[in-house]
Image 1 (cartoon, rainbow, N blue to C red):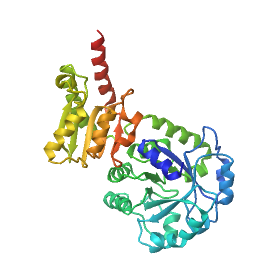
Image 2: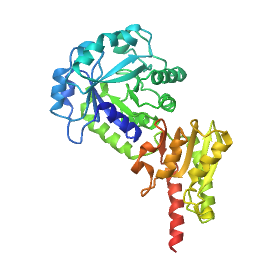
Image 3: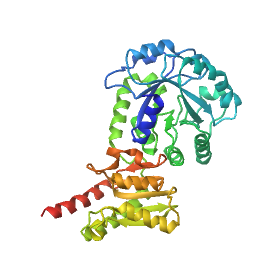
Length: 392
């Protein structure tokens, strides 16, 4: 599997990836106990200064089997030993050398080396201190308080065709990228989001994941605290077990409305699934299961809500809407959600037997985002209560 496919697959399946960043100039990486269960999902090799990475990557090959990706600060760091290269453009600055100049000089060499190229929009966010990247590129970071500019820059990266967006506080930053900035960017773009710089603890790593980061990068901290690698690897795995990485107070509010619809189904003797569709903070469609009443196996809550929303908006496409449903959609409903081009799906509890994520995440529109586990205990309890009543 190519690295791009590996990252995109994790992004679509909402699997968080942990990337270890190693600077070829530093020997501290040798103290890292790489291998076995103590292994990141990706290794990035590179730095703002320094020479080639061949020897380092060859040494890593004997320890790990995960993708090794170049994160180069210059042409001298390119290596045919790597699996891929982050072909980045520093969009937060206006120095033409780092917007396109270095890329033009590197293009032929990347092609000749046969490296898989991952187009990336690189955005420096002020982490509280001057970093090597700032000095080398002679650019200033975007203030962390200016979320609007950061979001606009990330969105511009996607619209220009970048396959990845990287929010970087900088090596050794005093503060990581704020969670509210990560969340705002995650809501604005559909491509995988990488976050790094200034992350020194499990709590800070979890905050980045919970705000919507697909990949968290840690490098500088592990150079001085190599024994903590296992803690971050384990932390990523435990956090992966959780759901709702991008859930918010609004999500809970609208899910409660969906639960209200589900209770209507329960009272009518229907399987208690409820759904509401929201557009620009307005509920435009509601529905609950009506399969028994209508004697129609397709009369699921999602179908009812999609039909109602289309009538309210006077449009067949719901590409600015979020669909909230108490139970994970089945394959049929996922197909309808995909045809309607719903931009986001939020569900409560999973459907182990017929849930669409078990069968095909691709039923949804490619840009659709999914959040699961919102008010999961309440959604699950209502379903369990219904089926228990049927057994009595």
